[in-house]
Image (cartoon, rainbow, N blue to C red; front, side, top):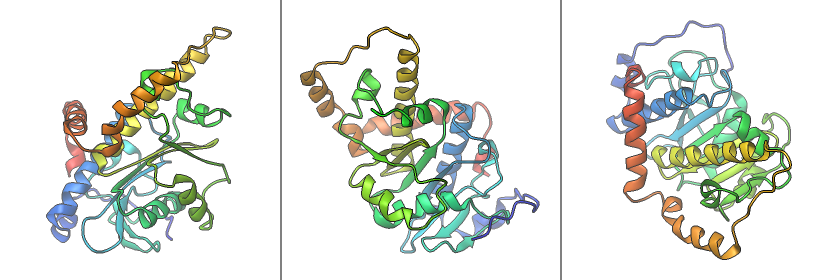
Amino acid sequence: MSNVSALPVQTGSSDVRSRVSPEEWEVRIKLAAAYRIAALKRWTDHIYTHFSARVPGPDEHFLINAFGLLFDEITASNLVKVDIDGTLVDDPTGLGINHAGYVIHSAIHAARPDLQAVLHTHTRDGVAVSAQKNGLLLISQHSLGFSGRVAYHGYEGIAQDLGERERLVADLGDKNVMILRNHGLLTAGLSIEHAFQLLHNLEYACTIQIAAQAAGNAELIFPPQEVVKKVEEQAKVFKSGTGPGVARHWNALIRELDRHGTAYRE
């Protein structure tokens, strides 16, 4: 697994686009857009954390960021293609990938073929909630939408150990939202758009929780159980990843991103 960090960054897109399928190129554009939107929203941790997406086709390949690039430097052409075993299939920049990113993302892509994208963040509020014993509190409309849908994975140190993959997948189970204790947030979706909508809502739920707790001794209001169950039913459409809501959410984000430039498409 290469972690080279001193090679020049190549940004041209023509060679990469010519050697991948139209379907892969479309996924590359969407994944690059997800990185750029996260940068706009300040969900980054410098060159750390990672988003990935499965490459369409029979091969078990996925795309992930080159290790050393900032999120606002990611483009469709500089994403790295890697296989489940960690072989770099296509590394346009020569920078390699973050091994911890490989451990986390390969685990989920290998075990959950239903999931097309995996997004992982180290935001201030996400990490703060991950460090709380009770995790995500059902105190807001945003957090109530995740009732019964959040998995938790205990912290084992920086994810360098391949053996952690088995435990991570076991903790995730059949869910697609996970809080990594003392570490950060993770969402996985039936599409990049779906995973991003989940992450957007989860990040906001964590921000609301930290803001509410900052009031000191003010007592928090927890909705009654019948309301929690009602919202769980209402939120099932978000779990499914289908319906017009996912596309509507994503398209609005793309319009926002495109106002800042379209270099991510290159």
